[in-house]
Image (cartoon, rainbow, N blue to C red; front, side, top):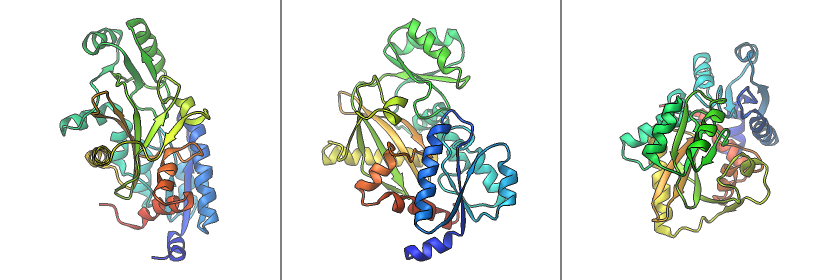
Length: 311
């Protein structure tokens, strides 16, 4: 199908962005970039900053399909996907179940464990007693995360019980369920998936304790290595692991997995993002460019998934 025919086939497209999650500012930037690319390509696209009136606005507008660029809760967790399903509006990315599962880091890990995929040992923190038990069972250092947030919001590396208790209290502000997992020392990789194909892995380098919010969106000294520096066999192993991780959760359309490698060369899955960032600091556009797709081609490729019936 030619690009001109593709653009016509999309009809009227609504870019859903903003929202009310802790990742709102990132979503606004991602959505603005996606909207500009769609309009530059000739797509009849407009934006909706998602709020309480989303259902009314979907009913008012004649929308043929939706490009979801909502990060975090209320957009990446299956809720908007379910609303669009009920409205009969095709949308980008994963469906309701995969979106909900991938947003919940604890359930993600439970599924990976059940199919034998490697992910760091972990515990759920709900009470102070859970913190004491996790310290005893897992040891230090540890990484603390809200179970259902993205963009490294509320995350902290801790080296002792006092720091763990403080980090747990901080993470609870974002999610009543907090995840703590063993710290993996070694390089971090991020691997994007597009239409069932795994894109070139990226090795991340930062002077921060880990790839946190500032390193992701604000710092200009974060390093992104493509090629990622792995030998051919290890890179193939990483790509296959990412494909299996996404398949286990039912991720479709596009997504991005974060993976650590320890000192013995073993890979450890951290999480999957079903609506990754699309800002000037974002990783999926970098991987797509290395694969031969510029930003506009990437956006059109993602949107093309809405032309096919969901399985």
